[in-house]
Every structure is written in C-alpha cells, then in structure tokens.
Length: 173
Ligand SMILES: Cc1cc2nc3c(=O)[nH]c(=O)nc-3n(C[C@H](O)[C@H](O)[C@H](O)COP(=O)(O)O)c2cc1C
Image (cartoon, rainbow, N blue to C red; front, top):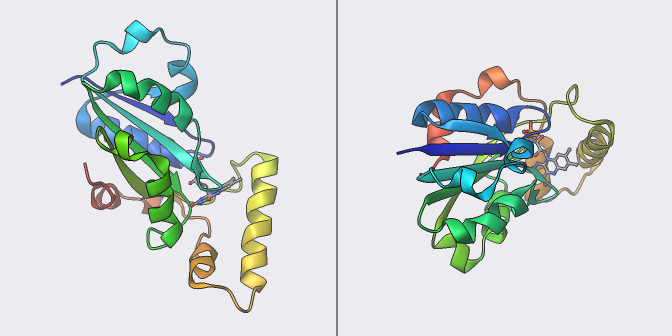
C-alpha cells in the first residue's frame, strides 16, 4: 500500500509525529506547503493519505486543504491527526476532534490527537506572545476550571520525551 503523510508544523512537534508515522508505514512525507503546489493527479497513486496539523485556538492548521480534497479521495484510506499542547485529558481535545469533522466526513476519515508542547524558542513572535499571555493568565487565576487547569500543564515538553510508545497509545488507526 502506497501511503502519503502531509503535515503542517510551526515548531516541529507535528513534523516529528508525521516523520514517525511515515517511517512506521514506509510512507512518503510532505510539508503541506509543498503538497499545495502539487497537481491533483500527483495524489492518484496513493492508497492512503494522512494529514497532520497543529492546533491553534481549537482549529487544526491547514486542515481546510486536506478536507477540501478528501471528498474526492473517498476510495483511499484517510486519516487526520492534530497536535496540541493540551494534555489528552483536557475536555477541549475531545471537543476539537468532534468539531473537526462532519458526521459525513467521519464515515471515511479517521481522526486522532497527539500531545505536542510549547516550544517558545521556535514559535513566531505573535504565537509566543499569545501563548505566554494565556499560560501566565491561567497560572494566576485562583478559580480556574478543571479545563483551564489542564492548560497550566502545557509547559514546554522537550521532544525527547515524546516517545514512539506515546504515539502508538494516542492512535486509533
Ligand atoms: C496561537 C496559538 C494557539 C494555540 N491554541 C491551542 C489550542 O487551542 N489547543 C492546544 O492544545 N494547543 C494550542 N496551541 C499549542 C500548539 O498546538 C502546540 O504548541 C503544538 O505542539 C504546535 O505544534 P508544532 O510544533 O507542530 O507547530 C496553540 C499555540 C499557539 C501558538
């Protein structure tokens, strides 16, 4: 089976998950920016296509590109994964996954979540500012909800701790 993994990543977590998945499945790997330049027919030879993007304010970056194409790829195996800083137990994660796909899309696209982290050194300035402000605000909040408390745990998680075992536990593929 010929498989393609396409990803969008700002600080590297999603890229690393995409690399792990591609290696495990002996798949081709492509940045979404390169994928966008390809012709429609360039995807014809793939039996399976997996898209991974990082979570920004509950949305999966560049997933529009994948979802716009997915309806024409129904005969392929399709999956979409997203990478956020939230720990998996944050209720937002389940909600984001639910919001990601329509009932119809869920019939032919699998979805799953992988935990990334906050790598301030690699973030673009506006992203860094937004994240630091949010984490600082939540740390100071006395009456934080359970959901907000899980965000406090979103401290930088060095890539080295995100092992392949974590990946296989997070996946429902
Ligand atoms: C502006 C901004 C908004 C974010 N919003 C969320 C969010 O809603 N939920 C979440 O879990 N993570 C959120 N994150 C964290 C990123 O998803 C996380 O850092 C992810 O690991 C980045 O992946 P990448 O390394 O592939 O770029 C946000 C990050 C930024 C910069």
